[in-house]
Picture 1 (cartoon, helix red, strand yellow):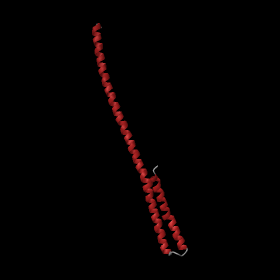
Picture 2 (cartoon, rainbow, N blue to C red):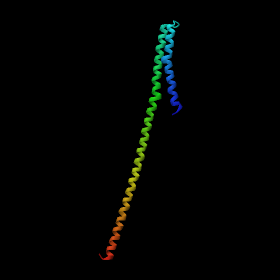
Picture 3 (cartoon, rainbow, N blue to C red):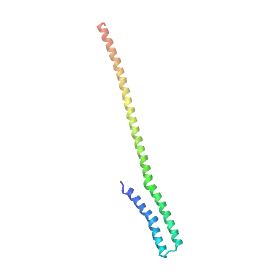
Picture 4 (cartoon, rainbow, N blue to C red):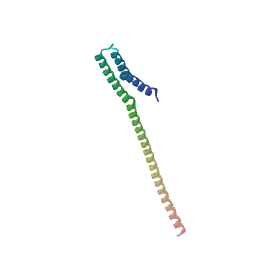
Length: 124
């Protein structure tokens, strides 16, 4: 597994936790200690939670869903290539079988001619 495939979700999870949990917690502590205006604190909390949720959504989409969809497409492509390869091998096998049958028909005709010549020579 690539380091970037683990690092990106971890960093985005950390940022989401900071925006959606830590910042609102510290703002609420500031409002409780009366060092921050409640209206301003409420706006900061709402904006921080919305930003964290939005970032979390996009992080989930781009670090989990998109790579899964790409891997499914890759699996489908590999499967299609395998099917195409098997179909090509089957077509080659069929052509070989047809050629063998044609050769067997030729051999049969030659054997029948030999039989006819031998019958004439023996007077049967």
